[in-house]
Picture 1 (cartoon, rainbow, N blue to C red):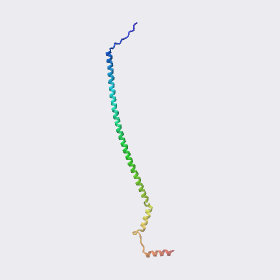
Picture 2: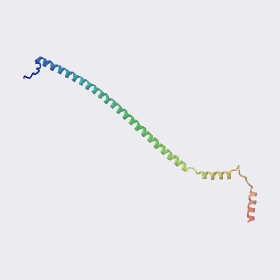
Picture 3: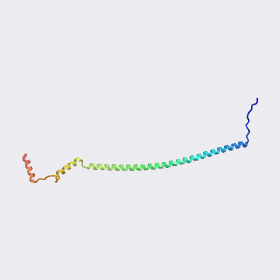
Picture 4: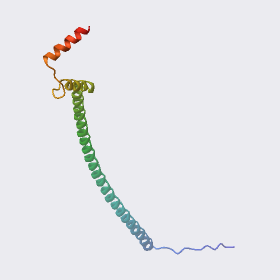
Length: 134
């Protein structure tokens, strides 16, 4: 029994060339699409890099500004500590409350408005009385 095979139609050279040209055109189209996508990605990356550089500059400026503010604050704190030290030294030179009370008592004792004065004769009599009792 003979085997029946299906024969493919013979292709001509021109049909093969046309087929190859079609494939090349398809591949060329695909390459152009890939190139366009690559260009889009490159432009996006450039924009991202530019934004990152701008943000880096802004952050550096902020850090520099913060550093200056911290330095000013440290200077102010140092001056305040110095002034507080001077105030404390000055306060140590003040008289304590007990000394002020003693001064008030002495002032009251020697105050001419509140004191009663005695005459010389009264003082001599008081002295004689005191000596006589002994």
